Image 1: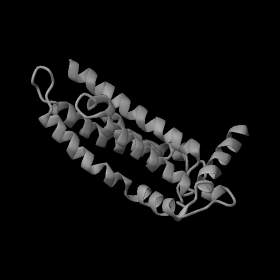
Image 2: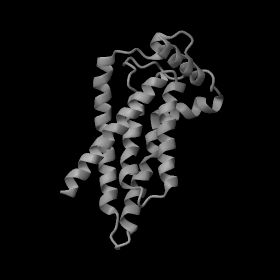
Image 3: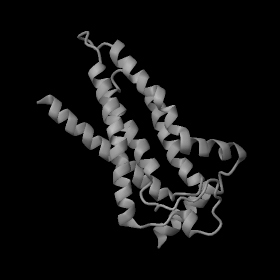
Image 4: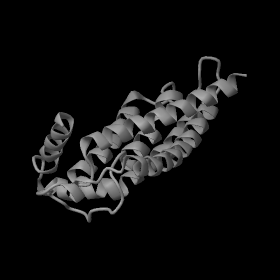
Length: 190
């Protein structure tokens, strides 16, 4: 189909077209340890929440704790949802299905759609955009968005996901976290 051909072309554009020695080191590091770059942000968010004050003099600590807890919960739920959806979609990974894939890591045995890395990365960042944007500078939120995007992109570069797997995962993770944030807000307003 046209969609599959476009997906495959875009996959090879990233997998082979962006190939360089720097990315050959950076992308596996992002895939396997990228979440460590988000770790310090959790403490920063809590610190800013505890020390920042709104116009009435109240801290943002409740919002900061909510963002951290919902973020971690969203990551767990996104990972579970991906495991279930992979069984339903049964899509093989590009490294299992295509000839000429530039494979830098071993090809996982699991299925491809949706990408768990895409889902968990975007599930992680969404609560900060909902709860923390009042007390965390836009630059830090941009950093989180860039990190999530690079972690997701690394999966294509490494040859283990199609671009559509990444997009599906990112949308799933962000939507799941968004629903949890919305539910939390509804409950806390009552």
